[in-house]
Structure formats: C-alpha cells, structure tokens
Amino acid sequence: MKYHFLTCAVLIFLSSVVIAQDNTTPTPQWRPVYHFTPAKNWTNDPNGLIFLNGVYHLYNQQNPFENQWGHMSWGHATSTDLVHWKHLPVAIPETIDKDTTWRYSGCAVWDKNNTSGFCKTGGCIVAIYTADQPNLKKESQFIAYSNDGGLTYTNYKNNPVIDLQKKDFRDPSVTWNEETKKWVMVVSLPVEHKLQFYASPNLKQWNLLSEFGPAGYTSAAWECPSLMQVPLEGNPAKKKWVLAISAAGAERGVFIQYFVGTFDGKTFRNDNPDNLILPVDYGDCFYAAIPWNEIPQHKQIYIGWMVPPPQPTYPWRGQMSVPRDLTLRQTKEGLRLIQKPTAVIQNNLAKLSGKDFELTNVKISDTEKNIPSGLSGNAYWLDAVLTVTPGTNAGFKIARQKDKDGKIIQETIVGYNTSSGKIYVDKTNSGAAKPDKDKLLLTTDMPNTGNTIRLQILFDKSSLEVFCNNGEKVVTTYIFPGETATGLSVFAEHGSAIIKSLKIWDLSGVNKK
Image (cartoon, rainbow, N blue to C red):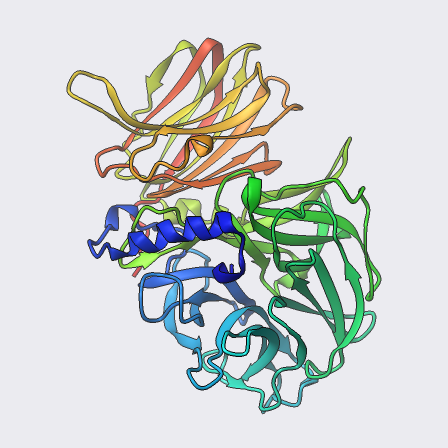
C-alpha cells in the first residue's frame, strides 16, 4: 500500500494510524504467536515470496527505523514451517541521495538457467520491485539479484528496466511461462484501473504484451496484482488462471478482488462479465496478498498483509495473515476461489499445540454454555461443525470477560444466522480500538449451507480469521481484548444447534523466538 498516492478516505485512516505511533508501551498481550510479525517497527505488504531448499522466504515492506510507515525497504524473514520465523537483516534498503529511492512492493524469482546473467554458480534469486523516487515524482520497475541465498542484493546498474515516466506505476509480479519460455510480468496502473502484461527473456528487457481493465471494482486505485494458475478442487491436474488485485479506499475500504479466466502467455481474458465483483475476503483488513513462487507441484500458498487499525501496538506494527492454500470450486454461479488455512500448518497442529480440547454431539437449545477448554491464552485454532435448526442464530463468543456481577464487559461474537443466511463477526463489545460504527459488524452470505456449517476460527491475540464451509468464504479482522478477556462459549438463540464436532488447539505456547 502506497499511502501518499491513495484516496482521501485512506489518508484519513492513515492519519489516525500515525497519531497512534506515539505509544511506546509494550503490548505483548496483542503480539500474535502463530502469525508473522516483524521483530520491531512497521511492516506492510508481503514481497518477494519464494520457497527454496525447504525454506520459505518472506520479504516485506518494512520501516527499519520506526513504528510507522516510511523509509520503505525490504525486510526479510525465513521459516521452514510457516509458524516459526527467523528475522534477518534488511535485504534491500532504501537509498538516500539526490533522488531518494524507496523500495516498494514486488516479487522474487529463481533464475535457475541464469537467463539474467547475474548468477555465479547455478541459479540465483532475482527481485523485481517498484522504485519510488519522490524527488522525481515517479515510480518505475527495478531489479536486484542475490547470490548468497537471498540475504543481500545488488541492484542492477542499468535500472530501471521499465520506466513509463509515471507517478503511479507499481507492484510487479513475475513468473516463468513454460510455453513461451519467457518471464511474464503483471504490473499495475493504479489510477487507470488497468494492469499491463510484459514479457522478457532475461528479466532486463521487457516488451509490452497487453492490458487488462478497467473491470470489477474501480472505485479505488488498483495495486499489488498477482497472476496465478490455481487448481480445481478435487482435480488438481486441471487449472485455471486467477488474477487478483488489491484496492483500498472508497466505500469498500481495504479490499482485494479476483477474476477467473484464461491466459495465453500474452492476454488475460475474464470468464465473467466485467461488472462482476468477486471479493477475496469479507473482513476489513486483508490486503496486498501474493503467493509464494517455487512451491512444489505448482501449489498456490497465498498470504496477505493485515492492515492495522488505529490501536497502537509496540514495538511492532502490522502483521501477516495465516498462509492460505488456494483452489477453485465449481458452483452454480461458476468457478469461485476457495481459501483454506495452509496444510503446512494444519498438518502440524498437534505438534504445535500444548494441548487440545474436543467435543462431539452436544446439543444446545436457546442458551449459551461456557467451553471448559483449559485454554491458557487468546491464541488458538478452533474447528467446529454445527447443525443449526431453521430460524436459529448460533456460534461462538470469544475473548470474553465478565464483571463481578456477571455482566459482559468484552466479547466478540462469531455466528451463523439461519434466518438471514449470513456468517457474521460482531465486534460491538470487542474491547479497545473499536472501528467506525459501520464496521462493527462484518458479514458475508452463506446461502447454500443447508442447516450445517463449518467454522474454523483462527484467533491469535489480536488477529481473527474465520474460514467458513471449507474455505468458501473468509472474514479477516482485528480485535484487541484485555489480558483477562479469555472466556469462550457456544450459543444458540431462537432455536437449537448440535455441535457435531468441535476441536480446539491451544497455540499460546508456540515458540516465537
């Protein structure tokens, strides 16, 4: 996200964020344990995601000096399990000179055949990113290369490799196209609500192929595009192209949309009407998401920045979502994007959890019941299947706290209302940092659930991600409960529900050092 180019609504949001940065009181009660956060200071967009030799590299927009947006550089962290992260020195720092170059968002590729000529032995990593030069009032595309496994980078002496002499032109995403034997870049023209596609044999010289847009949501600047081949659910050998675009501001706030279509190595064609808007996430903070390059079997693991609200955290600010595995599901409306918490983490929950809790076939009727799970803190992974009678509102109340008289002081409600057919997250009594009144209730339609709903609630100190019906819909947001607001209950109103299955993994003991 490039704040100084965004709409008035986002700039107003930023002003409240910056004001909050005066806080220097540590807030460990809100530091996530199984989501990525920087060791200190500000972070935003994930960049340069690449998987090499069993290691996930996560570069990110980072301010190396302070806990607010600015001095944009590429921070760097690595992991072997997408939970425990090793924080490394800044990989591509800003340059302060007469032109001042900030290193904005981009990607990284493994140049295994040394098409670029940068590699000393075998392949090397090449980063492709936007250089913002405020003194020149322009953005252009730069490249840099690493021969030490991504720890340090050398900027190409003949940068920029694409320069349109434009103020807004950013966020390249590059992949290798096996059919054309060329690198393909998709990059954004934010103000025009267009994407451009380029091809290159060597990552240095680029030729314009085509443009896409305007289409879908065009009320805010387009940023952070990604072009992915996504497998069909149940038939991974069959794939379709998905084009995802971030946009922030206007009536939708923080938002990512996607298009499903075809790509012939030159042109992307949308399978749906151009006015159809398909959201990736139905919360209020999921943004700038991109996939990892070089994942085996061409799987797509996708991660996004969770845009922080005004609530101050210290000594860090901003975090990433849980990584998500992407597939496409055939529905009566057409192919739709499915997101599930990545199997890399799910398959290891038992190892990560200090303890777990399980219930099966428990009925609740027009009441609520505390769940005596023995959780030691607000960092857990809840997976439930509920059978809900028509007309019933049912779900879970998390991060709860009562006063001495039993009155609720804090709680966040994650529920399914069968009358409206909606999944919702109600943050009315969630504690600190309440957003605008129109953002206290986040909802998404779940019209085809029948009377059974699966909810995966990933709560991690301050971040909350709700995956509905095996990834059909996702709601991502923040809450900031008090340290003693750790209660958890299940409820059913105006009817009954059966907990067909419930399992909770306590992740509060995950080692983040």
